[in-house]
Image (tube, rainbow, N blue to C red; front, side, top):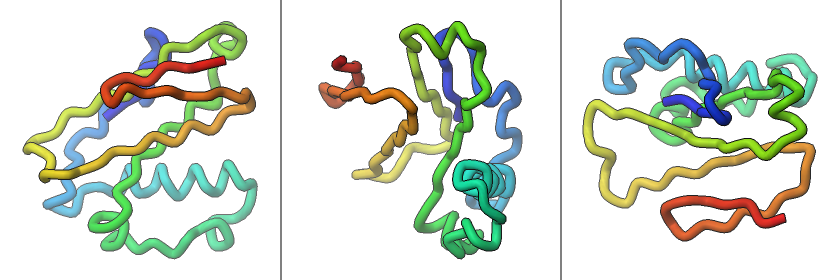
Length: 120
C-alpha cells in the first residue's frame, strides 16, 4: 500500500513481507504509533490509545502515510492524491476503507463512490 502525490510515491520503500495472517505487521503498527507522537507532539506513552498489536490486527488495521515533508511546489499547487494497495487475497465482503486527510487548508471532498474530487 502506498500514496501517490502527483508523481511522488510515499513511502518510497514497499512494506515488504507484511502479512497480517503471519503476524508480520510491526512496521505499519509502528508508523501509526509514531505519527500520533509527532502529530500531537507528546511522548508515546501519553499519545498511545493503548491498542495492542492483536487489537490493531483484528480491529484497527490502519495505514498512516505521513506526507508532511513535501517540496514547496506541492504545498502551493493542486495535488493529485491516489491511494494504491495490493492484496494477496480478496478482501472480505462488505469491507470498507476510509481515508482521513489532515490539512492546513479547508477543502470539501465529493465522491461518486469510485473517485473523490475537491470542491473549493
